[in-house]
Length: 117
Image 1 (cartoon, rainbow, N blue to C red):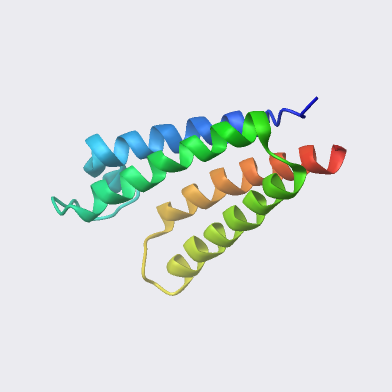
Image 2 (cartoon, rainbow, N blue to C red):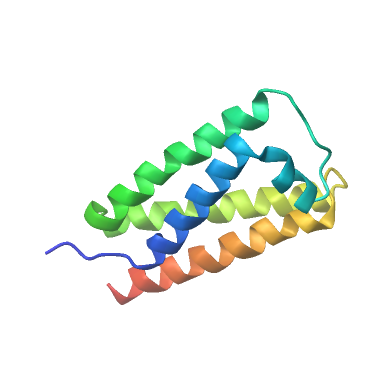
């Protein structure tokens, strides 16, 4: 029987909520992170991309191998490093670190589940 990774339910909820918010009410999220509001299409395209990730996380919850789930941890930590770099380089305000903190927490939870095997 395939192991179910409970931590990925948290990740699934996170990407679903983020994707829907970026798609339908993007400026609410941008304001939360001290980013300027926009009416440009790119933010909604990003929302669609994030929403699409939810399908992958759903599949990994039920069918993911430890190797694939471990790869998500590496990718998520790389994403966090990028967010932190944006803040440290002065390209973004400090509230963006909140995204990294949430993501790091979820990634470490997943890492622990993979290690338990």
